[in-house]
Image 1 (cartoon, rainbow, N blue to C red):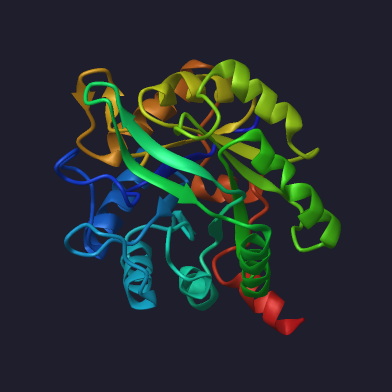
Image 2 (image 1 turned 120 degrees about the vertical axis):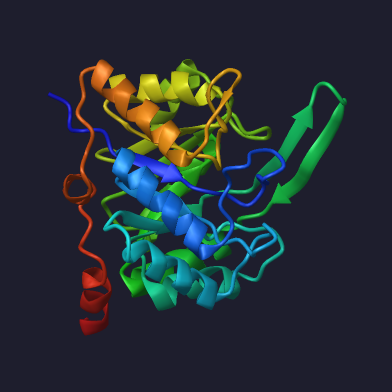
Length: 294
């Protein structure tokens, strides 16, 4: 029997606004309330970007600390903080990881064009070069290793998976390897089951992985990942809709559907404690203390 499915809820992201979806949380309290709702619905992990009260991206350690405190006061869900940004110095992007030591830190594994295209308006939005050179990736890995934080390897295309090889050879990327396969972003790999199967085949042996589908493609990819023995991420960062024409009122709506989908396909949903065992994660703070003792 396959292991239970670990569900991650990506609560807010940095690009989505309340004009697009009224349920997007901005403040630490709002993010924490969404974390609690997602955990109650079946999420074992919450992936978090910090936002300012107006909805823009925020990198102050104090804001992340407030988010972490608010989340911890409500739930024992596993916390995954983002490090991804454009135009922000790497030291600033990792300071909250070093100081707060969440269980997981998201780490982008390669550079790419990153854009949103409107067929209706024949125009590009958020048209950026998302630069993640090896020197930056290595810097983040060394910081996460020093803090005892698990790097979650964010791969938008097949080449990003291949980028792990030299880092494994150097010893800076250590097993167990935990991958997020992000599919359907313009500039990255298309969001199809065929492409997902190829991605999974290229992973290092014994890797842990989850799929992240963008938009309504999320659901077909989640179903494929569940049947392939993988894990899934849902949430308002990636997709607003429970189904076409029905917008989620909370991250919990999306988590509930993912949990129901897993059970319908014959797999249990991992509790927080079970997810920690599946992912070989320490309890909060334990790994960082062990790294300091070395």
